[in-house]
View 1 (cartoon, rainbow, N blue to C red):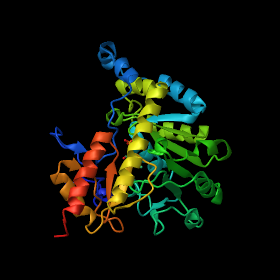
View 2: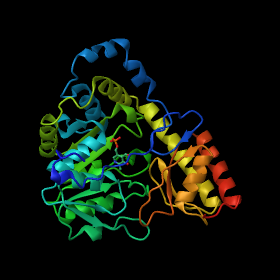
View 3: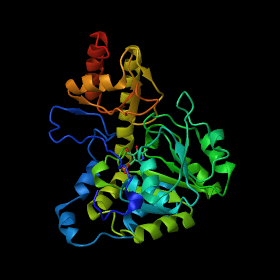
Length: 357
Ligand SMILES: Cc1ncc(COP(=O)(O)O)c(C=O)c1O
């Protein structure tokens, strides 16, 4: 730490993203919930040489073409949509500017939420998940401060049905609820249907998972006109050009290519079913995931040992050294071939009598 750092940030522990190994040839990478499929062919084609040459120009700060496509696809008015550089940026705005009375979220959820609290000096209320890792809306009844709900949740993959989200919204109409729907396209229930009746709802969606554009860094928020105006005030006070030209072009096509989007997510859902079933067959405890990952605890050994053994076998998954979930690993759902390799390796580890050191 330098002597120039603001003391308020001296205790800041940054978020640790999943490993992005340099030489990934031969390695099966199932650790950061990216899509195993390339972006839509339409998106790839749209990033033409001419588009690359246009990089000399700033991007459209209003993101008009992309907002037009999202507006048509989701039936929301254009001024109810804001674009960000990944949901991490939009969530940062929410913590920075929309948490005057603090922020509330589960003990086991997206690891960036507590980091944003520290970064922006927001006081956190941590509400433990129930023993089965479910979110119980009634546990939030007395909670003040903006509620952040990853739905489906990470890393458990479990989702709160719409009735539960509605309950959170109606406990206190003066309390904002931000629903982080990074994984909703893989089988959850979107809170979009609740928007017309609930002006205390803000939904954040990403292009990183179901639209295969994690490297493009693109996301959108949907909410009331007033909330979206607030998000844009923060965006235009920070970096009006946070969505770059190529990402905007690719993102628009990714939204318009509905068939590719549907085909990819259907394949992920089917591969998730195969993986969960196979792991259960090997004696694993597996949550009911509605995301593009599986959350699984091996029999007899802990999550870390399983993670290490998979790594030796050339398969990278994510282990969280955190209370309550040390028994588990999070496994991104990839192609069928990748998941068969994972199951083969897991069988060897479990049947081969690997034990705790
Ligand atoms: C629950 C949740 N929200 C948001 C994000 C961030 O996504 P983005 O790539 O859009 O910044 C992630 C990334 O893994 C996530 O798990």
